[in-house]
Amino acid sequence: MIAALIACICWSIAVFPVTEAVSRIGHQSVNFFRHFIAFLVLGILVFILQPNFIGHLFSSSWTNLLIIFTSGVLGLVLSDSLRLRALQKLGIKMVSFFSACQPAIGLLFGWLMLDEHQNFIGLIGLFLTIIGLILFTQFSYQSKNEPMNYKELLLLLLCLVAQGLALVFSKMAITKTGDVFKPYEIAYIRIVGAVVCMLVMALSRKKLVQWTKDLLQNKNKANIYFFTSTFLGNITAVCCSLYALTVMPSVFAQSIFSLAPFFILVINHFYKKEKLKRFQIVAAVISVIGVYLVLWQNLLSVFF
Image 1 (cartoon, rainbow, N blue to C red):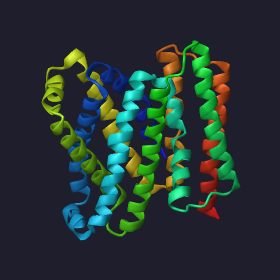
Image 2: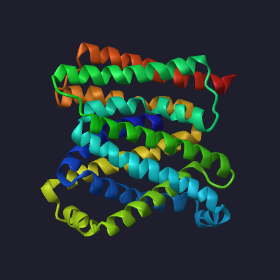
Image 3: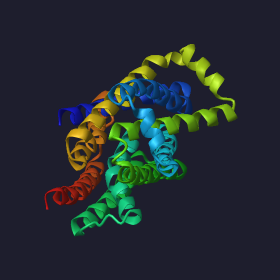
Image 4: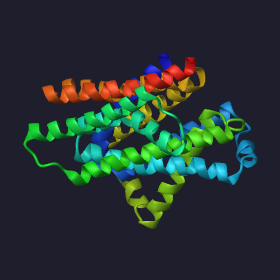
């Protein structure tokens, strides 16, 4: 439980320096290098914990590896890139609130694609989560007297869809390779797939050299923010979350992880002095109830 809580706190804090880094050198370069560094650091950890990791790779079918790679591309390339873009365009408050509903959206895709049955409590939770999202977005733009940024909101929704699909493929991978790979091995293969995909994209667009120069030259003094967010979010939080998932039921860990966006909203309230309006708080409460109803109905399945 302590490991899960540490992961949650680290993710919450990491949002602020990563937002600063994105504003200085762009979301694409930040996303590539933070995963590349995680690829190096976690690679060392994986080979220490599992010296026969390469043997496990060759003993698994290409179909199973493709499923894991697909999960990495959807979750770490597409979803994370869109999330970083949204932080730059929509701000921490909006992105954090949408991210808080990610567990419910992931379970919705599990219901639709993996035939993971949801009981009446879970369905009510999914409904409340969606209602809360709609209300929070509406109240946020009304309070600022601004027209809705439909393009960025749709991209943020696409981010949640990609993350939900990534979760489905991760569950498929765990089901198919549970007797071959440990959870931290699957997580590392996802990172490998993501880094390879982003490397190919960067080379094809001739962006890698410029991104590397920006990092080495500390463009706009971005490095302190970039390395802080990478250490907290992509290394410390990921390692703690993987450990938590190996020693406690995933639904318990997930319920703790889902608190991160709400920690972010509280930190943002004091750090950037962005206050939540009364109606935003009501919408947030509705979605929180929805998320935890979904988690609760899965928690019941652990015991009954």
